[in-house]
Image (cartoon, rainbow, N blue to C red; front, side, top):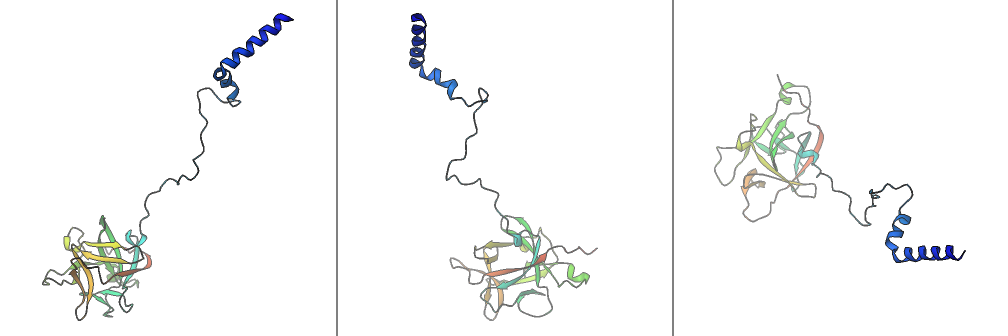
Length: 207
């Protein structure tokens, strides 16, 4: 009986002296496989994983829209021979975009949806090469995405409005001269534009 007490006491003393070794097995969760860690919960306050930036639907090339100058009377922009504001000339007032990289686009113009083939065949915005600097206008032309003077910049301002430009010029309203492309130097654009969604850009090309 005395010998058994000695052995038992010695075993307890050994375990106390090697606490780490003895505690390893007892701390392991029942059924946990050796060498496998338990997944840890996300730390409190950690932000969720970021997703891809959202593309503005109106700049995706998949929507048609009208364009209204914010500082104007609310009349829609219209492309006939020249881009005008509320000209009521029977021109094209529905627009869609062909993204070509960055913030650059080809801007296509369509007529009303009345099943007339001519209205479904787009014209494109083009800088009028016959104009004299410093004020240039925009005219209608056969679409050619490879033509540099059909490439326009559209920049989101973050308040639901946009600026429209070509190279270093911005589309502005000039009293007596209508809509022009103008150098602003260091000034902020005085004309900004709102795009009004009019549905999917699903016109069938003319054969």
